[in-house]
Image 1 (spheres, helix red, strand yellow):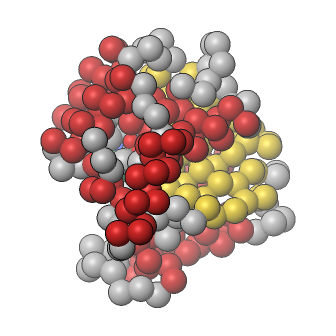
Image 2 (tube, rainbow, N blue to C red; image 1 turned 30 degrees about the horizontal axis):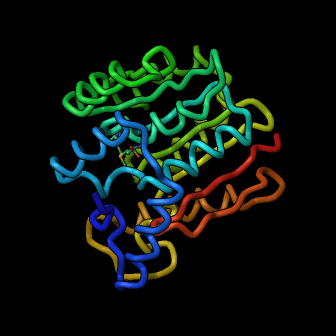
Length: 227
Ligand SMILES: C[S@@+](CC[C@H](N)C(=O)[O-])C[C@H]1O[C@@H](n2cnc3c(N)ncnc32)[C@H](O)[C@@H]1O
């Protein structure tokens, strides 16, 4: 299967490049492939990370030696599985999904994956599950990939659950071009754009974080917490 839906490439050269990247640095384990097929069938592939971004997440888990991860926004479990595949023995990822049907699908996929004992799915709005998540802290890595309007709130709250030296990863930090002035759909109000810019500015503040935004199609911000 090719990957054109997720990538929304602008040019033929760009799509060839992304296919090459996914084919070489995004080779999926069997359950991951099933999840992506499920996403394609449900017209949701564009919502999840692409295969090469999945492998990048896995690499970041390995490089940072993260053993306790919190993910906000599960969808069907694709990124959670990629991150789980980088955990060492005894490592765990807790992932939160608000939508009950998506949550149920992810649970089914987790159960049949090799990481069933390492992925804990929670159903609900992460903002309503704060107490439960705070009880699981500290985390080594926080992956923010839920509703864009709540990204900045997620950062201000979630960074408090990270140990010093832990990592924040946030996807879609270009907000589909909105943060650098592209005219984007009415779906993203000026306040959502402002909040994404505030998140980017905070993670770019070198008094607080050592971070970089990787220029993936949608922007993937990776930052180490210094406080
Ligand atoms: C971009 S998708 C996640 C994709 C997933 N991380 C992946 O790459 O495979 C965002 C998901 O977050 C969920 N979501 C949105 N707001 C949420 C919230 N406040 N709490 C928990 N989940 C939320 C949505 O229902 C959606 O399934």
